[in-house]
Length: 242
Image (cartoon, rainbow, N blue to C red):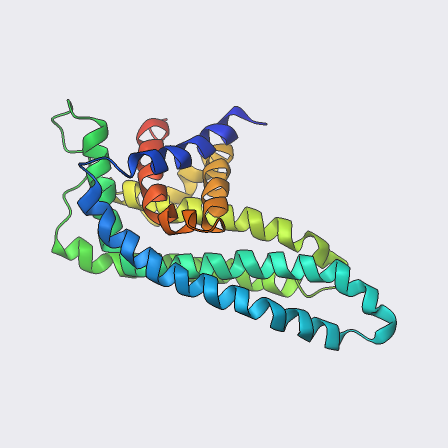
């Protein structure tokens, strides 16, 4: 396994370890509350729909192809799981964006206590009000790639690889989502952020893959968003210089 891949995964876990730090608690509280409410709703809705999806698939297949239910069912379930959980992450981040920006700023200052230069551009009310617009731009980027993947998921034979593509896409989008807070604070545009993440793609996919895993583990999924903001800030402070 690539050292950069495992290093990226480690930054996401470091974000979890930073959550209890006294200097971060008030910055973590609001994003954590938003995540608990919305992700709790997402978990309840998603698991409630799986039985419906399974029944729909069984009714759709002719009787002589009933055995395919056991092959297509898990593939379809995994595809839905990744797509739905990332969709809820987008909505959650849309609401929590202003607070995540402040959290990233605070983490940057705590990580370099002896550095008297500003860790990022100062965040004013204008930045806080415009941050949801940036999230909408990321949402449109997500939709632009998600639609072809969704179509691919329903094409027989080819749809076998759909779950792998969804996992890779979800890891990329989550890494891009959380990189925006520290990199946006530094003044990098959305295009520049994508260029930087592509340059360090094993690190990016390692980080995003671990965040994706955290979002599907009960209880830990509530901590995933603030942990990912912290981890992404620490990661790109260290890795985004080259």
